[in-house]
Image (tube, rainbow, N blue to C red; front, side, top):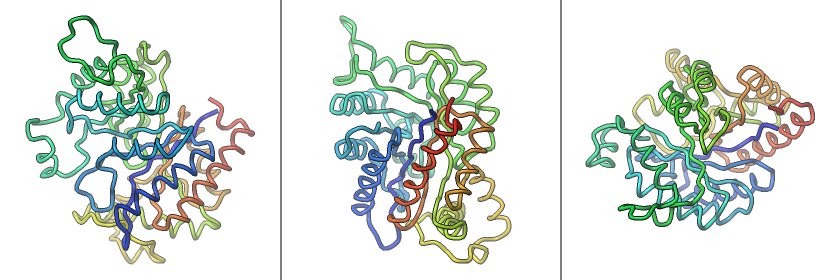
Length: 336
């Protein structure tokens, strides 16, 4: 059965604050834990008022401590912002506290704008060293050897699944070469998805960490009582994309009854292309969308995200999707 997982950015909505965003995140993670979702991932972003997951490892610990079964991890840690040793220590600590439940997804983008990237990477010029940093990080999770000058404590000898994330061919190639699971950011940058998946599956080399290719795809899913209500809820995500491209990222806005009055034709085209991997509607419409997506791309897992303004509506959307997963499993649609 294809697992369904959740990607959360700990959204800070208009009229709210980070503390409320963290309460909502934990509440949603606890719901996902009960509903049978496979994993709950949080993403590193900086200098973005509407995203509260900048201190990603700290928030992962908070969520893991408040749940019991679901895997919790980073989708992802932007490795160029960090020393590999520090990441290994942080996730070695998390995996020691919550054994068998921590994932580490790695990205090579800064997760922010250029001035903030410069502030984060005071002694780092670019992401060109990403492959070497990944190898260094993987090495810290290996059992320590006698005389090893630097080791991750904790971290050495601790099992932490490592994923590579990407929206281009670069991480697909590197994941295949290193024999790592791969997560493609099709929920906001789907253009290279088909080519990246084909490359990853074709060139995959088995490793001690993974014997067969394993690809997870991101998809936007907003489910509600009716198609019209789901489309209205989805305007929150659409507005956020437009605001980001206008250079005015802010708090997560409430939905609009008339999105056409908000964006220009060119902005609409760009957002529809970026968010093309989406299933938005009532239970029947969303089921059709997910079925079509699975049939076309054959993912090993789906990473579902829903940037919905009202927390109750967001919870309800994930409840609908969990029920759909059960129906799809019974119909054989989610069998790999």
